[in-house]
Image (cartoon, rainbow, N blue to C red):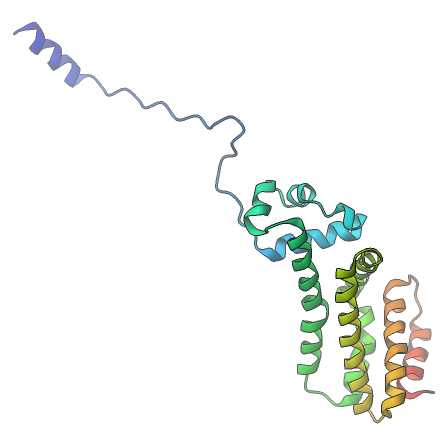
Length: 211
């Protein structure tokens, strides 16, 4: 057998060398990238806002909170300013527009609807939201954007309270003033610490019936 044929026969019988695995580039993170929706970014921003004010709602802090890169933020949002506009609209819908629609959709007598309003301050949803809105109101002292959104939120809530009071037989002029007092009561009852169940019942009776 010729040497060339012998060499070819040996090469054919030898096992193929194993392919060397590709090494990831330095700094690259293995696995698929997390894809986050807008709501995840907004909810993280509300947490940061409550913890330290609007100055803490930074792109790097958001990315760190969510466990992603800053680049992922800019994939979804054009800029921080655009994100903050979206954040305010998110809170407007979540805290008021959707909530008022939910309350209005419940089929119940006017008296029960009024009692449901008074019960709002004791829900976990309201207690969490109260501290978010406190931070929003501080932010609104130096930025007209949250100020405009909060004004709209306040008006929507007051209008709903007034409608419920009128449905319970309260004259319109009195209902307007009483809705404001009820709103103030709900804010305080949500944020102030302490057990005051007895006082709460007296306040509800006075605000609902004027006695």
